[in-house]
Image (cartoon, rainbow, N blue to C red):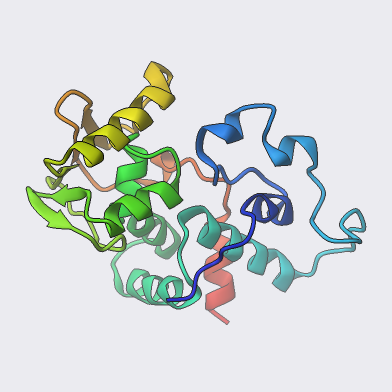
Length: 209
């Protein structure tokens, strides 16, 4: 499957906002966006007037990059959100938030979305007690995400929890037991619970054309 393998800090600079793609490094002065917040490229400092389509595209790309979702995957999720009762933008964000890899990240078991996705791919995570190796799996309310009974799995998660330290607070819709290394999805997240710097209404406008 195709995936981006270049420097991820370029994505933050391209979107003009911190996307927190490199884990705890993004919270330090070493963050590339803090040192150079201009768009990448030779003419990065030149900013022309942005069109309506350009603004919509940037919001869509920003959302994709935050969650590490490919274009086709994102389009399919949008189609599902359209068919779901409720506000399309809110439903789309809720679907992205309840992906298995994002739950692992939100629980503090990984320091970045990329690390969470890798852990799931390597089979280090369980869903309701069973091995789960598909990052895009949808987690339902009441489901429990845990760790496989392997030393490498536990060591990775404990290292991530230690790196985040007690300063990290999981979202209200997720109950985390750090000692047992378990995270329970209490309910579907609402828009007010999702702290991402994205205007999802522009994404809906883009796909509605």
